[in-house]
Length: 136
Image (tube, rainbow, N blue to C red; front, top):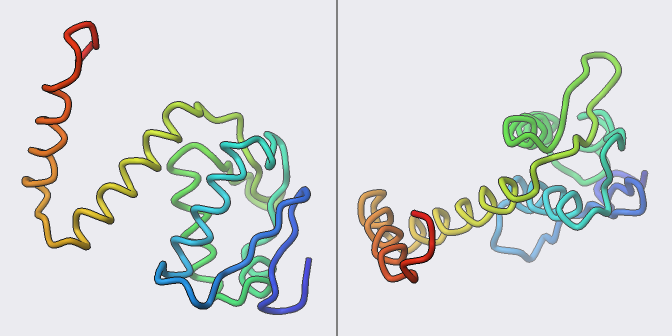
């Protein structure tokens, strides 16, 4: 792992924040880990760094790193094993990709001022325009 605030190297994956990004550090880190798992660069069984070490390496609060891990555990991408650590799981990649796409859509819709109902209506309309062979 690197010096404080410079990034963390896990299984060949460098986790680092872009200070010039408009994305909050939480979202940057979560997206980087999700993408590395989706691409197979972080493989099932890989032990992730402890929360405090990750936080120190990428320059965020330990609470923020813990929230990233918690949300990725909820999504089924990471598994906390108590004192043994946090590990990459063998995720259902289809669900992980759909979850990430939904998160991106929700962030963009909310950022543009759309309500939940307006956003859901847009998704329903998009589904209604799909070919009839698609299972809805």
